[in-house]
Amino acid sequence: MLRRVAAHLYGIGRHLERAEWRARLVDVNYHLLIESPPHAAEPWEPLLAITGQRDAFDTRHEVVDEDSVLDFFIFDERNPASIRSCLMAARESARELRHRISSELWLELNTLYLEAQQWRREDLATRGVFAFFSDLRDRFYRLSGVIDGTLPRDLGFDFVVLGRALEGIESVARLLDVKYHYLLPNLEDVGGSIDLLQWAAVLRSASALEAYRRTHGTVLRVDHVVDILLFDGTFPRSAYFAAERLAGALSRVAGSGRGRDVVPGAGLLLDALDHASADAVIAAGLHDYLLAVEEACVGIGRTIAEQYLAFA
Image (cartoon, rainbow, N blue to C red):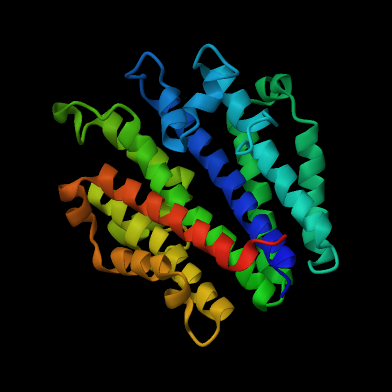
């Protein structure tokens, strides 16, 4: 397969996954602020710290408030990681490959792209933030269904999987860090009503609340939340589930099961998720563990780009 084609397929998967998870990150922070009183002078600042975009934000905004952060993460075309920018990038990659993707995928993605071009901050205020993100979440579900239901399971599909899986692992870690950075409650507040509301919001943002209840019941415990989002091999939005898909796709792309040899970081990440436990990583420091996962994803992405995607 041509590297140019592989790069566009990988870009479709990665940018769509990034747009969806960026929406989830903003949505969970918004839920946290609505459901519990803010504990910081700048309650939107954690999102900027978690995504590593504080410097880029500061070049365009003087105040970290709801309006400026929503504009930065949703509408700002100068921010390459905004939802609108990610949709533009995914659509451009799809446009280059209209002969390689299904007409259903092109229609769904192009329609969402055209709608995103019409988004305005005033419209968001009129519709409401909850309704906006609920509708957007449904559109991403449709896109995922179209991808899974219309693309042949060939080498091209594996590159889409690589982009989606790698972005998904990194985003799960960031999602958990939203809660961690949300000015961790005082020791006496751990397990209290506000703390539990925040963890429930994290689960809802990953569409994991019902899956959590089926596995662990109605009592919310931090170790169980961490377990289902990081280590549960049956839940499709967990980091481990995505890491398995990543390793499998890499093995097929490399041929002869050599995915771990070509990109050893992927095998190491899968092994780390396979042999860890929620209790262990919480005891050792959840924040540090999540940062290590994010750094591993960055390294794997760099290696994939060098080995398979770079072209003159």
